[in-house]
Each structure stands twice: as C-alpha cells, then as structure tokens.
Amino acid sequence: MIHIDRESVHRLASVGSLVQPLRRAFASNTASPLRAHYDLESLDRPRSLLLMPAWQPQGAIGVKIVTVFPRNAERGLPSVNAVYVLLCGQTGEPRAWIDGGSLTLLRTAAVSALAADLLAPQTPAVLLMVGTGALSRHLIEGHRAVRGYESILIWGRDVHKAAALARDLAARGWPVSVAQDLETAARSADVISCATLAQHSLIRGAWLKAGCHLDLVGSFRPTMREADDACMHAAFVVVDTLAALEESGDLVQPLARGVIERCDIVALSALLASGAAVPRPGRTVFKSVGVALADLAAAEHLFERHRLSA
Image 1 (spheres, rainbow, N blue to C red):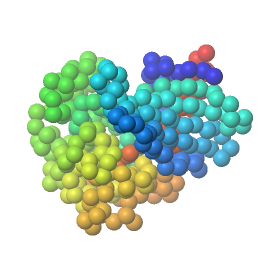
Image 2: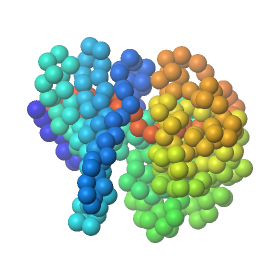
Image 3: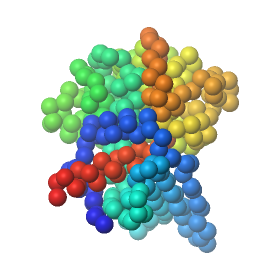
Image 4: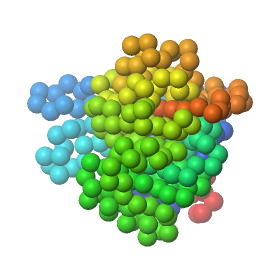
C-alpha cells in the first residue's frame, strides 16, 4: 500500500486536473451513502468520528475517516484530522493511504469549479472570493480553471488576511486585489464564491446581478448561512448532494419559509445525467456540503498519477 502525504497530493494534482474526473464521477452510478457521524462518549472532551464511504459497482472502494476533537487546540494540535483509504474493488486490499485534509481541499474546490462550468456566465469579468481560509485560494484556482476573469476580488473580515492572500496570488500573475467593501464588490461580481463560517447571511440578493452565479461552500449546519433568502428566490439551485437540504442553513431556512421548494432543487449528478441546459439568463446557486463520490474520484486520480510517476 502506498502513502500519499500532503506534499504529494499537491504535487500530483491540481484543482483544475480534477474537474474532468469529477464530471465523470457525478455522471456515474457510484454509490455514495450519507456520511456516518458518531459522537464519541467522553467525560470531559467532545469527540466526533465521521465516515464517508463510496464505491463503484465494479470498481474501486474508498472511505474518508475524519476525527473532530475541538479541544485539541489547547494542545497546539489540529482540531480536525482526516485520512482517505483507497481499496481494490476486486480483492478488497488496501491500495493507498492518502492525506485526507489535502484531498478534501482539492476536491471541494474542484466540485465548485465543475458546477461553475455548468452554471456560471460564459464570459464573466469579476470573481469575488468571500473568505480567506485555507480553501479560498483553491476555490479561486478552480474558478479560474473553467472561466477567464479580468479581475478577482478577495473580501474577508480580517483585511490583513485578505491582503496577504491577495499578495500571494498576485505574485502568480493573477489579477487579484482586496475588496474593501463587501456590498460594492458583490454588486460588481459575475461570480461569487463563499467559504466562511458565517452564522448570518453575508451576501444579500438585492446586491446581485441578474445573471450572477453564487457558489456557497461554508454553511454545513442548519444554523449557518452565507446568503439571504433573496439570493435563493427565483434562482436555479443546484446541490452536490440532496443531503444539503437537511444540513445547510442556506437551504433549510428558505425551504422552511417557502422561499424555495424542494422539487425545484437539482442534484449535480441529475443535472449532468440529464444533459439539460441551464436556464439563462437568470441567477444560479450552487450549494455544496461534501459528498463521498467526489473523494473517491479524487483518490483514484491521485493513485493513478502516483503510479505513473513511480
């Protein structure tokens, strides 16, 4: 069994290189059950275990194992740790042990890029990145892989973090700058990508262009929101998995108020399988919470790239 560590993950794959493998995966019949979430009993420390399995009927098997120990920060350790185990579909033997954190960053951004390739305007001028965490640079890379932009704006609550990220990406020759005011930046953007831990809406529908594409990554609990109800009203809404309808406040709350209907929300896999055209002009929204079939596709790509480079 091979070990693909963090550095190797980023050496073997880019966000852009994963878009086509993910396109095939979402259009396939890969089995991807809901993640299993276990709260591990402890007298004084909260602990959680998450398992995200996926498999192909005649192919590979994989599972991402994630632990969440919030009080690890007191020890100077990461609160979230993850590994991915790739197994042979014919024998069940382990084939690869892959750094789960790096795999998750790349596949999350690549899923957003795939959705943008289907949903975003064909010739957007401005991309706005809301959030300055580890995922932000990968999301920008993914959106640039499927569309050309004249300008990329970065907004964050901490302007110093936004400036540092902008300097880093501008050094690559990308047209990146810091957005001082979120409303002004949102009004100018053709595509907006959000990756934050916001509890209350940051983006307002009243700010958005009629044909804006909104990529929402951050909200993973019913109490978390990045976009208000007006963003969802009359928009064409696509999700990476229908589990998002139960997990993300960006959908749970407007569904409860009747702003959107469950029957109008489309799974990315169904959109790809149907080959239907996205209604234009009009606002589009993509909401992701993470789906195991994307992890499996990314892991297979990394394994193959490692095999070819050996």
